[in-house]
Length: 187
Image 1: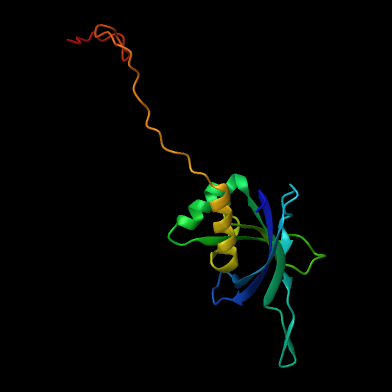
Image 2 (image 1 turned 30 degrees about the horizontal axis):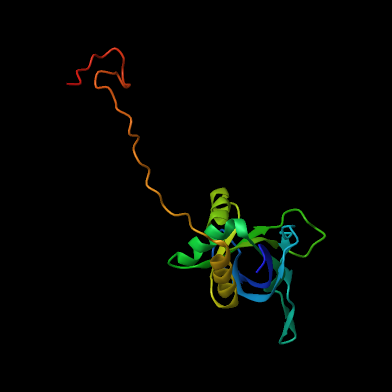
């Protein structure tokens, strides 16, 4: 295991029509296909990967509702605590952050994958923003095995040490704070 791992994956997404007067469609992640992992060279993976249409012929009509993107999941030893928190949660998850592509006439893509993360702390920042679509997939299979091995290797929880009170003798007549205008009797 290396301290920095890039894990390849393919995201398969579907643009589903919705019977709603305010929105035309919704984006649903159908699958995340793991590829292989390689050691990182210190450079974070490039995000913002466009979802490109996967053309499927169906009854001599072209169907453009499936989209695909090849992405890299970044596992870094500094975030091992966050991965451990994810594994210990009631529903461990892979988080996929999607964002609409705005004002790009050259590309046929409408949506991009901003990031795939296994850290609930990172995803909380995206949720606070509120402008992105965050899809949560269950953390199972080879990705879960890799994350568990990574956490076992790099996460070393700190031992809790209870703070002990100072042994200094405090003078009962000393005024130890509070409003100085109020006279107190400490007997």
